[in-house]
Image 1 (cartoon, rainbow, N blue to C red):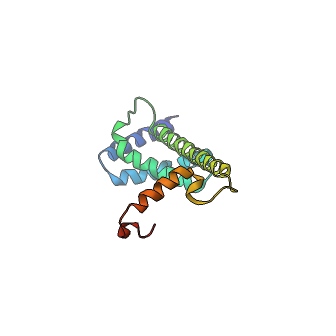
Image 2 (cartoon, rainbow, N blue to C red):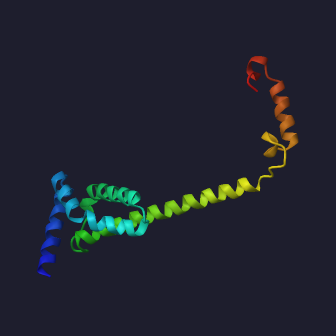
Image 3 (cartoon, one colour):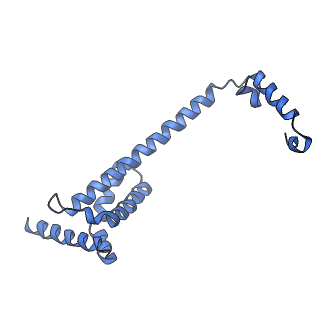
Length: 147
């Protein structure tokens, strides 16, 4: 119990030094807690590369937000753990959103009638195509080139 308390106090002091822009303190803090934080991120994301990116983001945030750490609210480890957990969950949600968007796009593409006319008429009606052709015909030749 006393050993854990001493570690908490030492890490809180490291965060004070990080808040004062002490890069050596950030390196020491990283060496002490990066492995368990990585384990948490990996457990949430199930992909080592994404977990590594989360840990990088976490330590950037620790560097930027060390001044907001309040030792009366909890240990520095739990503060960093909370940041890690939130970052990993945010990344997981973003991954899920991307997967849903891809699925929606694939469903939309599958709904297009492949037996219908190709090109612009699959999206535009024949009246729209006629209006566009008429507008293009009204342009001078040098502006119409390439159409």
